[in-house]
Image (cartoon, rainbow, N blue to C red; front, side, top):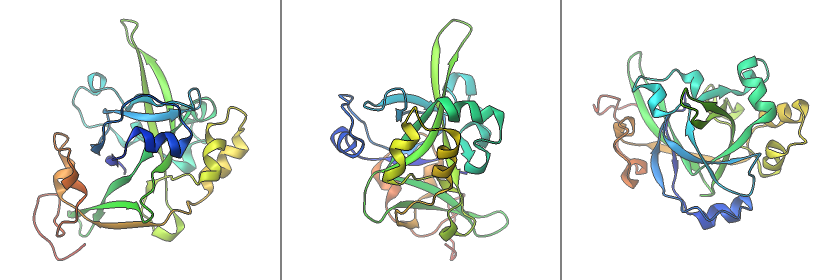
Length: 229
């Protein structure tokens, strides 16, 4: 499950990386979590940054823990489940990120947090789908859901589905059909990742600073140091 990631860069870098003309000022976040308003690049506005809620709006979630299905879409289910397929065919987006967090199980009830980032330090483009909702008052909301996959070189660890540079335009193109899109989400990324253990404070949504991505001795979700990790 991917429920935390990092977007620590600036607007100029994103403009250059994704050929954008965005004038939005990007505020770095070291703890992006579901229900947070975050930047995406959509097929409807491929030259700009849009800000959508990840998974659900804070009001609709009502402070309850969201089910993974609201913010993660396994790549092998994108075109198999009707709830995802319509969005995947019509409403796709790229989720820019500079890194992400994963909890690795080291025991039946123990997990240790890791931070993954590109060895090249480049900004990653992760596949996503989005939807528009209206509430009873007529207010419109946009949410996005991140596509995940299990890279062949990472065992059985589910990760964000990172798009290769050659696949980014295909993912956003209105001319891409289901066959092309399916090939894109089957292809493994050519970006090499590195990882290290970090603080379990990533679980706290009110903590957001650069210390979250710095290397820390392995400790579990309760803050207890462990020899594993």
